[in-house]
Length: 252
Image 1 (cartoon, rainbow, N blue to C red):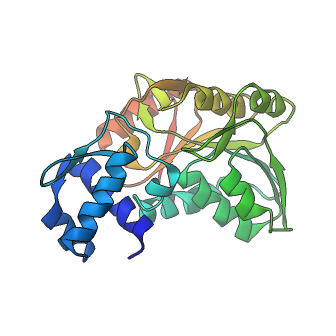
Image 2 (cartoon, rainbow, N blue to C red):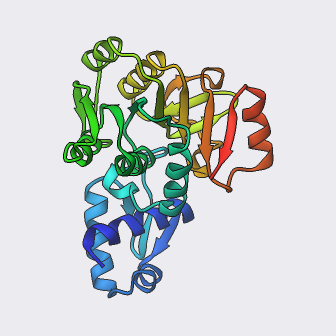
């Protein structure tokens, strides 16, 4: 297993369990305890978790993990969400894509289909699509966020205001009926709002682990969202609460 893959698995495990010991992680990853200790020390130095004598515990509350460490989490669910979301895109549409692991999966699905225009502020999405001549690509400029690979801020917002999007897909870090869509960064939230303002149809892509969470910056209330594409992990109570806000919930 590559080091990056080990780090992602360690972070996912510690985040879900709250803590983990070295021996359990070694068994989970199929590596030596010495390798796990080195990985934990590096993640501690990056501020992604807290190293303890026998293992590790979670880092700061609501820490935003860098995109490279989030890509493996809920991967199968995100692939199904992307496939379901692609069905909402008509032929020849102008599609807005914000950054995030699930929107990145959707970009790959749409690239295979072609015949659309994609407007994105995510440099990783742009890098995937620029080699696809069957997709017209528009890249929104702005201030680079290393955690999400997105370009955000006033320049991005002004550029988005010049376009009309048929449908915009945004990723979120938190989703509740009371607080709506939230994310970790206020500039990212502002640019996400700009995507939604420019679009005729607003779609949120979120695996079920995001439901019930509230993070730092509010993107919008759920009343401004037309569709939520998620997975079967969403509870019936959550679905009813979202539907009561006027959101069409689609399970992948």
